[in-house]
Image (cartoon, rainbow, N blue to C red; front, top):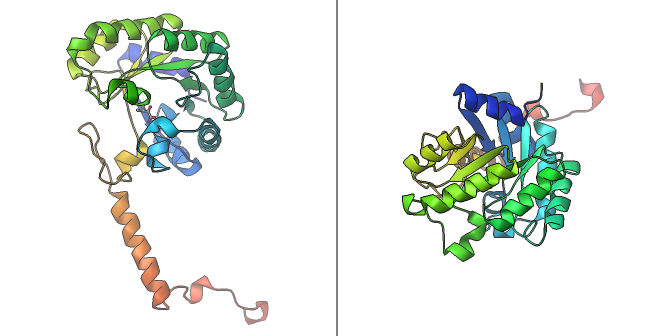
Length: 269
Ligand code: KIV
């Protein structure tokens, strides 16, 4: 049975941790589903980890939707959330609704996520939810706002009031969950207890209702990028490099293809 947005709330209420990861392609989505993650986010982090851009601002809506389609094909029984990229929802509520509908109808996403809890994001969130598409909020560090905030900054308790106000305003719109990004652990824990909707932390400590990480980061596929909150569970970069070198050497040395890798005429069988 497909996991849905209600399953996250059930987990919060039972005190069970929610597990989530990003994915950008079919095979990773399939593996994440097999591993039993509770939801998959097709994050705009794709701009950085797939396309090598410096930040997420260049994520393109058409590309995001194409990758969402790949992910929903790979994880048919898992809740898939499309991340609304910079420029896809800021202009107006109708722009936001139109693009959220594209994630849903073209990409097959079950829900969308959008960044921020200011008046604009609250209005967009409400409009999308009113149109029938579930929304996940996102407060704390907002990668799409680095030009305004002057960089990637952890949110500490001096910004408690603003953080709580934004999260509660989003909850009021009917979001089914809220991502808390790079927030002091105690503050994220206090906010998690105060909210009725589940919180999903990334760099927000141990007391959120769930955790999300960028899949490339946990697999060792994001180069030297290693903020404090990331844990590498495998060094796939080293394994891939080893395989690529072995392949190259075998081709150069005439070891590959071997007899078992080639076809002969039918008569010779
Ligand atoms: O795009 C992304 O990977 C995200 C995570 C930070 C949650 O939004």
